[in-house]
Structure formats: C-alpha cells, structure tokens
Image 1 (cartoon, rainbow, N blue to C red):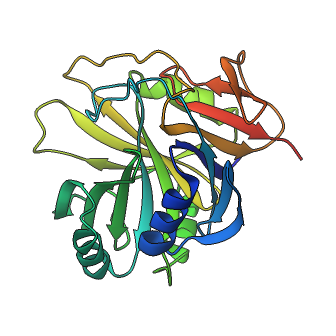
Image 2: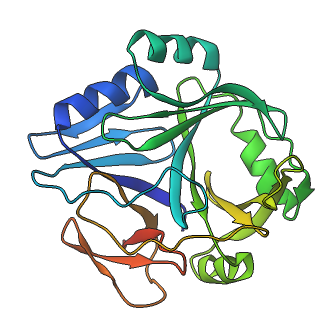
Length: 255
C-alpha cells in the first residue's frame, strides 16, 4: 500500500496552492475555495480549508511520537533554497551534508507543516531489502521535486514494522546517527515509490501526542489498499482515519 496522498489542513487554499506550485513545482489537478488537489510526481497533496482550527499540539521536536515531516527529493537544492530565502520562507534547518551522503534542508509551509528537501541518493548504512533499495535508486534524480517520504517518530520499531507489514511495507534500509547521544537511528519502510522514514531514540524519552484532526497542518497519509488494522479514531474528508501505535494518522484509498 504505497502512499497515495498526503492530507493537510490549511487556512487559505490559494495561498497554499501558490506556495507548493512556486517552491515544489506542484501541478494543480483541481482547486476550489475549500479544497485543492496537487500532483507531486509519486503522490498527491490534498489541501482542505479549515475556518476555525484548533490550536495545533504538534511540536517541532522529533521526540514527539507520530508525524514529523514530509520529504521531497530534488536535483537542485541550492537553487530552491535561494528561492525560499528570497520569499522569506522560515527555515527549521539550513542546508547541511547529512549521514548517508546527502544534502538536506528543512523549512515550513504557510501553515507550519515541516518540509524537507533531499539532494542525492541515500547511501544506506544497512540494507535489509536489496530489491527495495534498487527500486528506490532507480527513480533517479527528479526533474521536479518528487514526494519521497513521510517521517514519524516511534517508540518500538518492531511494533511499527508489524503494523505496517499488514499494509504491505517491508523494512528496506537504515541510517545510523553516531553523533547523536540520544540513540537516534533512522530506518526506512518501503512500499511502491515512497517510504515511511522511521525515527527511533533508544536513549531518550518520547512524548505521545493525542489524535488531532482539526488543526492546521498534517492530517493524514492516504494508503492505496483495501483494509486497515485497528479501529478508526475519527474522520477526514468524510472518511475513517486510523492511527498506528505512535499516532501517525492514515486513511485507506479503497479501489
């Protein structure tokens, strides 16, 4: 069940559409006063206007379990960073050379959703599924920004693997973070042309976030498939929303 869509609540549809068109070359598939659908090569972005949002409980600290950021592969990171700076877009992390021999940067969309740009093919420290890695690398350098992953912090990697195995995900690879004294590790679960980037912190306490669907920012990912493990925790777009053990929200796009 590859990720088919990422759902975001936003204050202003037109503002968000223009942001994603300008900075991530999103192609508008449909846009109205209350909703928009954008193409990001390997997945869609579904925007919903929310008039009276609750105050978001999302914290920009990767020790909060659940959703962390949305990641995109790019071939021209410096040019995009320059354009973001010119537009006075707030940054979370200026470009760095990261573990795995890639360059990355983090910034925020107009409603505070954390976004990552990644330049270069990740050189994984651990390869658990060679076929999945080969499929990942075969996508190559994108002509325009390509949706690559949603990141999530979890308490128990084995529980996360088991949960998403029911949705067709395999443990593809891992990246060590030897300079982080919190026991930080990154593992990648793969299905189709995108990943779930899974953060674990073996030497630090994590905070659980209660389900929240009525604030601006990330709402859920939408998987292509037929079934979901567990009970629904609420609704979005008139459909049932589920959550993994750490509170990552998702929907199932049934055929």
